[in-house]
Image: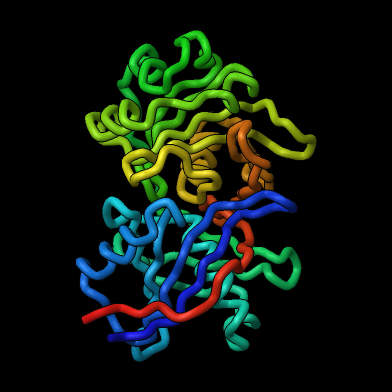
Length: 294
């Protein structure tokens, strides 16, 4: 029986919002098998969106691996925010570092920008984007989302961009239409799997509160749940989409995220050296030990 430090945190929380829950296990300098990591993630189904496994090598470099209850996840933005915010907060040497390089299991090396002292948040460089383009019809997308085709705006294109996860981006005409849609989980999962889509981000350029740049929602049935309440990779793809369509200068902005069944969460976006960074903080909810059988 092995024992590891365990943390459950809510990433991208703002005020009374609940953020997006993630758990992480601090493996120290040890590793777990793929089967063990998947089994632990399955035990967390319905409790957190993803489990992050953090380990350090002899040079004290940090390596992150991500699992949902369904499968290994190529990249998990909110899990990275939760894990690294807590690791930096607890490590005196890291608290004084402005840029920290980490390694992810599928997306290589990424930079963490430490803004805890001035903003109480961290920023993460999204993986370099892959612009796939989209040939899916608006009619098929609308059917998968359970909405009328007319709800999809024709002022901007639908697109597929991978900035960590392969994201289908869908513009919606009005905020009211965007926050009130609740697709059928199995129908949308089937559509995503058939069309090689990881997540679906719908957005409105109309916001509920002043001071926000846009409102987004992210559906992720491929990973075992309908909606991701606050998303790093999806909003990073959205940032690259906005840059591509000349709708954003790259200056720091705040994004509202969530449906009308919750207090909206907050994801920050900015650019540096042409790269999109996403940012936020995390609220610690549970700290303890996790026992893993041999």
